[in-house]
Image (tube, rainbow, N blue to C red; front, side, top):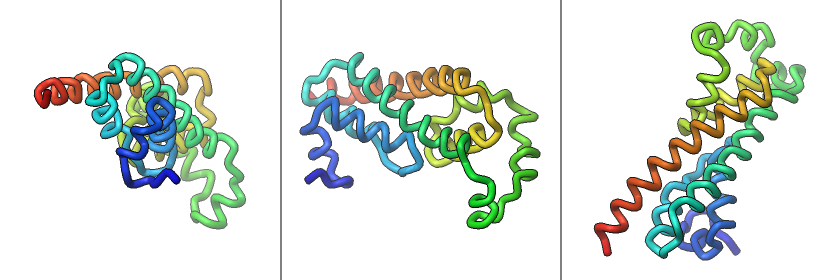
Length: 156
């Protein structure tokens, strides 16, 4: 059975383990796929497929957070979280930054999920949010993988 805390176990599943861990990390579940990229690089997996698999998994996980907001039932949000629709509609980030800029930065841990849920609640463009979310996450995993590759090469 796959245990959430042991990255070596995740690494035994290769690309599938990376995809699933990145998906979880991209959703509202706090998780880290970055360590797994380093482990898989150390095991000899090629950089570009790792970056693409992690990005795709994280991007799809991000869409789960976005759609949680997009298809949210206001009656349940008000009942359980005590947030009125007017508070979301007056959300100040949207006035200062475009939805696309916010989607670019949704890779930031914890804050990114809140941004995506908010973008969903505000009915931001599914397509534009997805494009910019993908670009931001691709940049994140590219930088992380390159840094990890440098460390792995110094270890060998």
